[in-house]
Amino acid sequence: MDREFLLATSGGAEKGFTAQHDFLLATVGSSEKGFTAQHLGGGREGIHGTAILYSVLGTVWGMAIQMSTTAHSLDMGRTPHLLGGSGGARAMVDQSVVSEHCDHTTLKSVAPHQEAPAPSRVRLLLLVSSLEFGGAERQVVHLANHLSSDRFDVSVCSLSPFVPLADDLHDRERRLHIVARRSRFDLAVVGRVADLMERLRTQVVHGFLFDAEMIGRLAARSAQVPVVIASERNSNYRIPWLHWCGQHLTLSMFDVMIANSEAGKRFNMRTLGLPASRIKVIRNGVDTDRFRPDGSSTLRTELNLPDDAFVVGMVAKFKRQKNHGVFLRMARKVLERVPNAWFVCVGEPLRDNFEGAEDYHREMREVMTTLGLEQRCLLLGNRADMPDVYRSLNVAVLTSLREGTPNVLLEAMACGVPVVASDVADNRLVVPDKEAGFIVPPNDVDETARRVSELVDGTVRKRMGTVGRRWVEQHFSLDALTRQTQQVYLDALGRSCNAQPTPCGAAS
Image 1: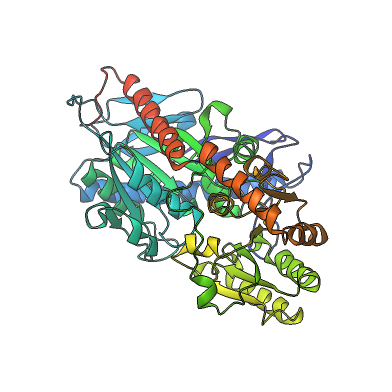
Image 2: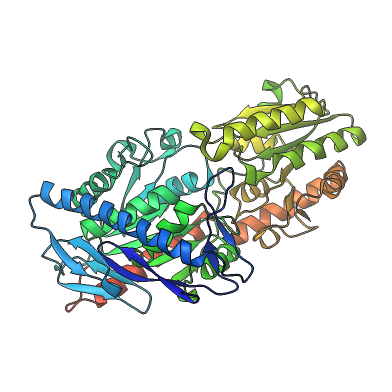
């Protein structure tokens, strides 16, 4: 047990992970989020107790999967059949399954081969937790709108009825499906999503955000979807205990992970033990037609800002990783040097106080009061007119403790606005330092304030804004994001089809 332990899953047991010095081990530790996964720094204390804990949890998880998929099979009038998986793991599948698609890291069931006419389009389902304002949610809409309509028939499924970004989704009435969870631990939602996949005859499902990914993987197994794509949009974070369990218990249930940063790829190789070949890096892209420089902005007028106001903004959800406290303390220092400076924060806390976001939002308002910024720092909440928001800024700041590839930096640069960002994840690769803005050490209030103050010079701002716009056009276009993503879908589907006794077409 010093080197490895067994995870009981779905009526069998499969090897979990090897406990190495640089590997992520789950330990029972107390924090504000409950149990979390932590780096042990090479120690193995507590592994025996943890092994027992995960054995029990794995059994419960497996029973939940089996009950959900069994109920789904019975609802669909099928006879459930148990298929033995790797190391004794089992999953409920239809008796019509004729083959297994596997490589050295993957074992997943695929639908039987059926001939299809060559022109048929790939039926793709983008599954997301919600369509509220956020980077992952915006990317779902972008992909749905811009993937080749000649090659893909794209549907979008939200697990929440909160879908403000759906207003931007083309052909919303036909393509948007809402399968709402009735509670946080609504296991029956797996069957309902599987029903949707079968009704749409889904061939590829791409999940975004943790709960959608877990539900999507289980539902795809039940509905015999040939290809499942995972996502990683962050890096170097403490993995909540339940998330760690879910990720490890479903490692065999997806084909390829798309990470939006090299940092995210390295993180998953380290923590999940995934080989590099199973993770593709595709950085975010921005719609440069929508986000573009424009001399006009109605937001300044709406906010009654002085004509000579030097406006510094931060666009980010109110959650702890965004580190708004550094932005606010920076604002206090900049205001002492630049009397005409104004500051805006765009974004709201996560709903239902998820991850303590509402508590954090309240704390930041208290910091504003303590620093005497109530009259100079405006909290704007979520905004639908984001291009106009960026164009109203002189400088965009992002003080995050961790990121993937931040959309806000790309969008600001596309609008010709210089940026100041913390040196985390791939930010140094995203922002040409001292050319389109400045990269500063995380948590360094003084350096952040100094760099923001340098951008009071309009000549410097204009030069950096021009460089940033050109940089995004060349390296972070929405066309590049779309083209690379759809190629991952097609390659994965091709491998799945080739694994079957007879090659399959693009559709059934």
